[in-house]
Length: 317
Image 1: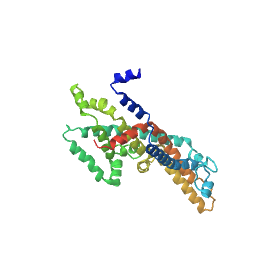
Image 2 (image 1 turned 30 degrees about the vertical axis):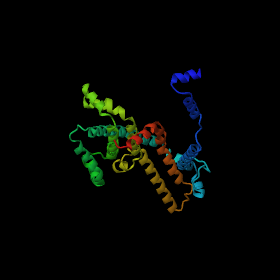
Image 3 (image 1 turned 120 degrees about the horizontal axis):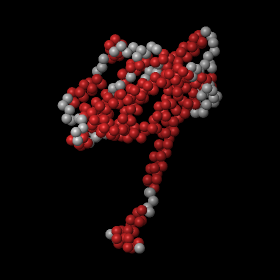
Image 4 (image 1 turned 90 degrees about the vertical axis):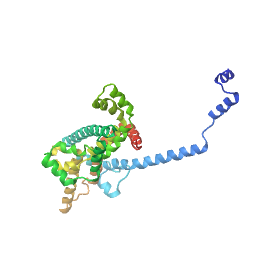
């Protein structure tokens, strides 16, 4: 029966025997050594990257006095929730700050991605007559800009955004560097798809919404993660434009809390009050855990698209 199968497949007996032996060949020693060294190095790098995060979480649960005496450690020596009790002394304030940050991040990232993608689609079209002029206009802003003072005057006196939540969204809405990356993704889309849609009678906006936009999942995930991190970690714009405490984002609320804690520690030390047990170092670590926790939980869901987007975006189209 085996002879009949060999005959029907067109292979000689010697060729079939050679094929069978090659299938049974085990990986050579150099391949095994290479895999062993590679996996070992990757594991070591992963452990080194995880150690700071573990020490961060451990220090946030460690008593302030223990940190002063023994420093930071991977495992907490004296477990306490004192730092978190200071942060969540008024839970409504933290929850409100979370709400502001989530709103600003969601709205800013969504609008920013739509504007960036639409702009990248326009300037990547070779049949657009003025695409070089518009591209130069965008690129010029990366070299020269009005500066902080003129920007502040523009937002306050002309746009009237003082103590307005839009002042937290508009500054990060458009980034030329992200535009360059997004244009690479758009340029990778075959022009035949766009031309066939035009033949079928589709207009430009419909082509962009129904054809171009769905094909940019990896690019949207990559740029979206960058923009979301920028909005989530932003506190500087809140310091410039926001006065009402109920409009404070999470980062700026934590910044104010830390400044107040340090001021109290300094005043207490000046008047002779012992401040060894007042959480300062542990409070900083607990704030980092509170502010970075949601982003760490979000990353695994976009990791697949993020890695793919970085790979595609690194190759010029």
